[in-house]
Length: 404
Ligand SMILES: Cc1cc2nc3c(=O)[nH]c(=O)nc-3n(C[C@H](O)[C@H](O)[C@H](O)COP(=O)(O)OP(=O)(O)OC[C@H]3O[C@@H](n4cnc5c(N)ncnc54)[C@H](O)[C@@H]3O)c2cc1C
Image 1 (cartoon, helix red, strand yellow):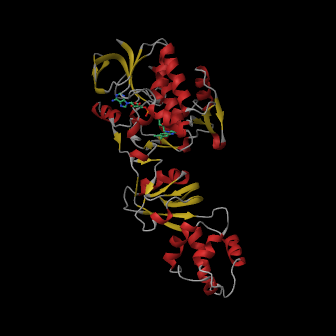
Image 2: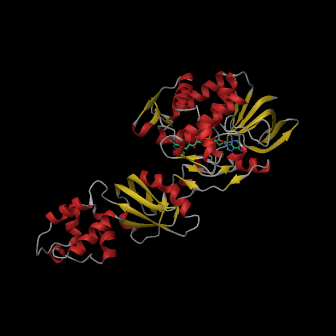
């Protein structure tokens, strides 16, 4: 008989195991993958953006924002840094407040978490998928691929649907649902976006710094960073950052329009001045060649064709300020139609999950069932890109480990 069974050897499961085992608890972790921390290994492109120096509540999203505020209270970046120091992992800080392991290797995070679990006598069974969860005699009984196990407490740290190729599943949500918990419907976020625009193939491969704008709930959302045009639509950091708002819009619409400033560092006036300098009266130079002087060639036809200017020459537009302004507007406010996303397979995170109204934010314990805990992405909380999702997972793990 264990003090606690933890379902999932991911970010929050491993931390909750360490914290509770340090308190003398006898812990069993069950993991369906063939190794622990498979998703963790892929984080931050293998470098693991382990946290952020400013994990303020406005960087998180939930249908119950007060819950996030309460979870984060008193559990800041220093808490995380100290925890990792205690297992021998040093952190370094980078731009935008992002934190990484000093080794810049996600594998070192997993290795040290695993070693600490083993040192503390935590039993970990991989290739062991939990099938059912039953409340029994004041504790919990679970069945898994190779048998059954019992414990006084149960921590559901199963993650959520994002990245199924790394183990993302709905199991935790199903267990919660069967135990009578309310579930908030999920959608993929921090995800690449798709389009059916006709110029996609032409633009594919172009990666430029852009400012992306979306009208969302009567507000203007803007994100700046790389945008990568692809044969399916758009990717890049600015796209991942705005994807949550786009996906929310797409819940009730078939498509939305993103406005992309293809030259965010050059103002409208500066661009006009630059272009005017390059205009030669009576020149027979085609616009398609002339524009290569200041913008990526693969973007030129997608800019000119909707304006019906693709066959014009420089000479023909020198005296037409309206046409010049149209070109400048198309560069500064390029319209890109989005009709969906690459789905959970392309998503870093899934929104939605177990309703946090039924969870105690100080202990992560269910308000419906004593000694049942939920940690990490399985809960209806998701964070921005920049280390916020892992910060939330670590904090949940620590809180549950302290309470179990
Ligand atoms: C490609 C990628 C890159 C990312 N990069 C970052 C980043 O740099 N920074 C950041 O903050 N966040 C990042 N994230 C998000 C972050 O990895 C997750 O939010 C975080 O891992 C969630 O932790 P968790 O403990 O809730 O679940 P997970 O870490 O997903 O762990 C859940 C575990 O439970 C196991 N499991 C599920 N069901 C069962 C079952 N029935 N039986 C047994 N085991 C089960 C799964 O196999 C999995 O190992 C990234 C995500 C992806 C996909």
